Image 1 (cartoon, one colour):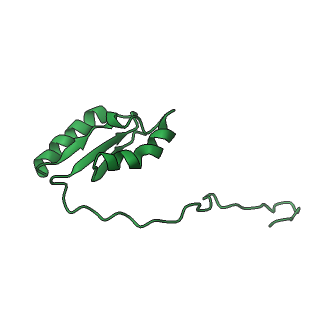
Image 2 (cartoon, helix red, strand yellow):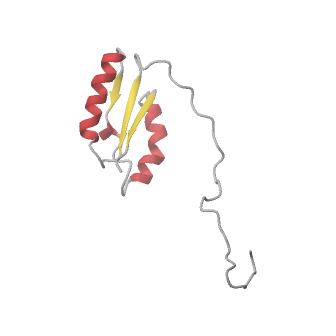
Image 3 (tube, one colour):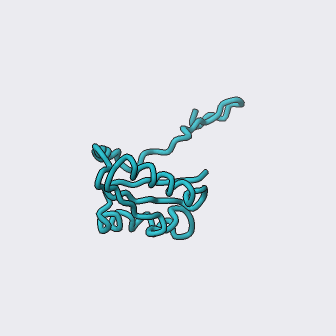
Length: 107
């Protein structure tokens, strides 16, 4: 109740902010990772150094010819260089011929 000064009246706000970027359609899903290049992104927060090798092994068994661009190619997606890393990511992915990304985040 904007402008009300009566006891017990409170202004209410919606906790979700206004949308500032229009919704974009999702990229088409790959039918297979066979022969594809997969980039690994990591925020260096939780066990990516252990988990990415396990993922690589399992995906190589399932999808012959799949190749990986390791997370250290890109740097941490969290921290003091985060803004620059994320801003340059599309160009790097394109230059490396990346078809898909696995993004690992620790909480």
